[in-house]
Length: 173
Image 1: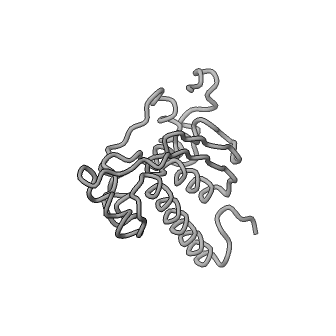
Image 2: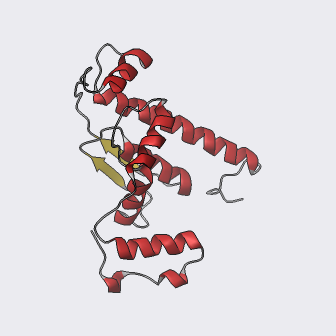
Image 3: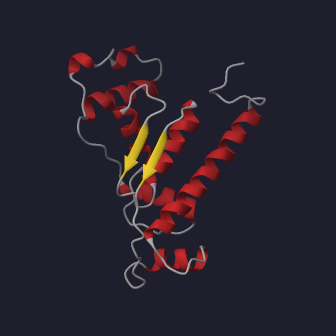
């Protein structure tokens, strides 16, 4: 979905911050594609899970931008992902909510696809050894990522609240 030029409000010059200008320009210029090098996504997921369990996860920042682009101003949107994989869409929704106090929700669909112990050794070991699950499936990685991402976001929000005297950026005094 891409707005027509006449539907765009303002120009990058009207933005209050450099980040807003970049986002506005990206929205206007990107058109139909969103891209970031996969090493960034792999590193983020490795830091979150402690191991490299996916070769090409979607980038959480780019998915968050896509969600913002597809549902501008709708802080209660519902995102549906029929191929959840590692759960990037869910984490992106949680991040957006943490950033702006939104109430977005997500529905992720991931069949319990078995992980081949020979082709995907690290992912298989992560599920069976680290998580202690008897069957290694992609779903187990999806669920664990969401648990860890949620816990990390909660910890970050608590730290922000503590640093600002108990108020989050989305709270009004």
